[in-house]
Image 1 (cartoon, rainbow, N blue to C red):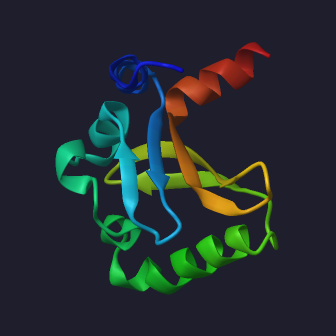
Image 2 (image 1 turned 180 degrees about the vertical axis):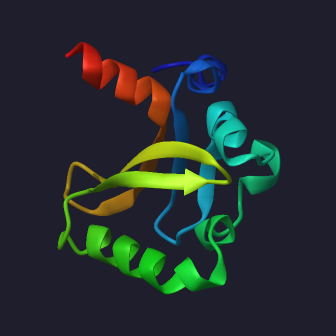
Length: 122
């Protein structure tokens, strides 16, 4: 089994923003890079609704996307988002248990400039 301190240290040192929500759409992990990209304190986000990350106008589309992921209507979501002038690429996908039960959703946030540079190199 991996030491939880090591796992937290790894997650906080990734060059990717990671947000994980549980089955009730509550944030259970919000790493440092996600905090930097979204200009939020990760410590204050743990235990809060994922909807607090979005404005009222986005609430219904976000709930629909989460529902579609949970119901396997959509295998994942990916796209570009302009967050306060910073372009981010987000990749969002569900986590399934060994028995096929829904366990949560992971959101990866990538810096768009880095991703564009990588795609140019390929």
